[in-house]
Amino acid sequence: EAGVVQSPRYKIIEKKQPVAFWCNPISGHNTLYWYLQNLGQGPELLIRYENEEAVDDSQLPKDRFSAERLKGVDSTLKIQPAELGDSAVYLCASSLGAGDNEQFFGPGTRLTVL
Amino acid sequence: LAKTTQPISMDSYEGQEVNITCSHNNIATNDYITWYQQFPSQGPRFIIQGYKTKVTNEVASLFIPADRKSSTLSLPRVSLSDTAVYYCLVGARYNNNDMRFGAGTRLTVKP
Image (cartoon, rainbow over all chains, first blue to last red; front, side, top):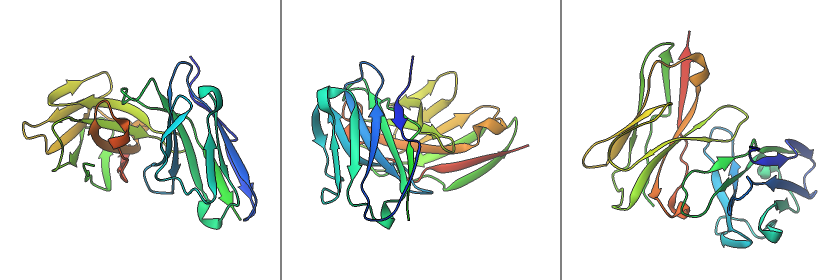
């Protein structure tokens, strides 16, 4: 069974440019999460989806970050414009539902903003 | 949200048993304790979850005392490949919104 797929794995951009990350969760998983992980820190939740609905986006910097999960499957996280401080690993995870604590993580996208 | 405290780092040698303790003094009645493992350049991976006493699976054991204010992840006979960061999370079992990752414990297994 395929795990959570993320692309790209690495991205280097200059500040003020836009960037987008894509996530394909495990088939049948209704809950999808986007995390940000800085070096030496644990993952920080950005947004959580239940199917198509964003049920927790309190930690998402909405002035520059946006996310969507059309049709309740794949999801895209966008940053526009990117800042130097956005350099981090962006992780996507999925779980069967809100009632399932076991989250399955993708390998992440390492973003470097120059 | 229940806050967790773990050692920042630990060292061990191959073949030894490793115990990582997590403190969660304000754990709520409905909270479960979940541990994740993260290797470099990978996302975290679920290891084990428990509510009280002892839980064991093919990877680890989780010991939870009666007051549930702490928990201990036990890794038997570690190998070099167990070098990773281990995270302790506390939250209601049916509400992932409660669960937050801390900085974790960086375990280094030496030959």
